[in-house]
Length: 423
Image (cartoon, rainbow, N blue to C red; front, side, top):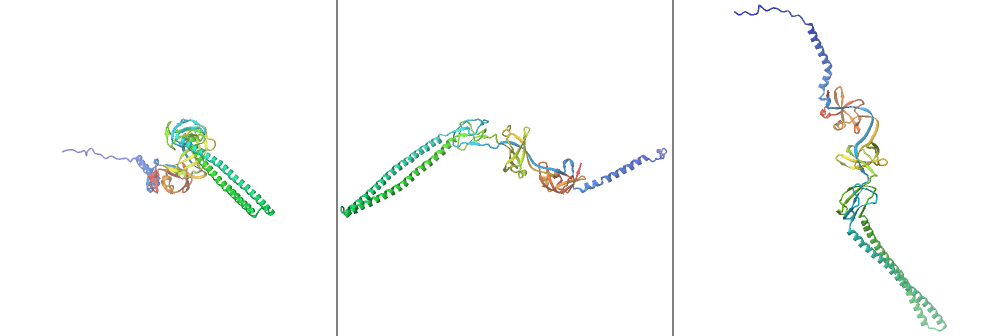
């Protein structure tokens, strides 16, 4: 028979452990306190539609103070006057300068050789000379014709005077009985004939004088018209010597030496370095606020110059609008074509304006709402924004000074009314 261990068993008395009891009671109190402390946060967490980590967001505080609207961009130096020279007639071109050469106004830059144009000028000049001879000959003929008509008039006047004298003598003789009535009548007929001849001579002189005058005038006008043709051709021949319209520097050469070009072909460009401007690209959203005459600043090479907006392009290219600033005063001498400079244009400046840092929330919400952050909860709040600058946006309604809002990353909220912000 197998013996068990019952003979070895004995009762063990367990003494109560007060230290362990105190630890358990303290832990329970601590857990209860934590639950009470976290209860509001847990309630807010359950009241929010979503939870987003603050590391994914950007925040800004609404402030009141100076509000400056400006546009800052990089610009490049361009010539306000940069004419391009063209060939006024086709022909072979001989360049008189090289790219980069300094030139004076009126200096010959290139010569276009056009025998055809020069020959045409010679032909038209010859026609003009022939017409001038015709004009001078018409004047001589007119004087000769007037002389003949005047001679006929003078003879007619003499004949009339003689006829009057003869009639007077015959009438006296008839009264003395020395002449017959027939002789008196014949003397009267001669006088009448002389008077008619005199009248015709006067009329011929007047009519022929007008005709000769008109003929001379026609010859003169024809000659003057031909001279206009000659002058125009002479201008074209003179323009074969391509001259600089300004003091400046030769820019780009568009042709090679002795190249044969057609009429209106580009030859070269000249840069007027005394009238430089700065061209900048402005975002379309800001371009509508730009205006001619607005003040700005141009900086570079350790210098800052005052500028004024001088031109704004009416065309939008790739969301950008080109604008130009001229220097307010004398153009700096150390600048060069296409040199890069920093440009800042002041659009507006006001004090005591409620603003907040600009962020993507403006574009995402269209400026109609923002997420106001309080006690770890971002609440969707209707707002109304005003003007905006590069780094700030004006708040017209919905927020007050000291409010903290989410300015970037709200796309992850997906339009929720309340979002919990976790650390």
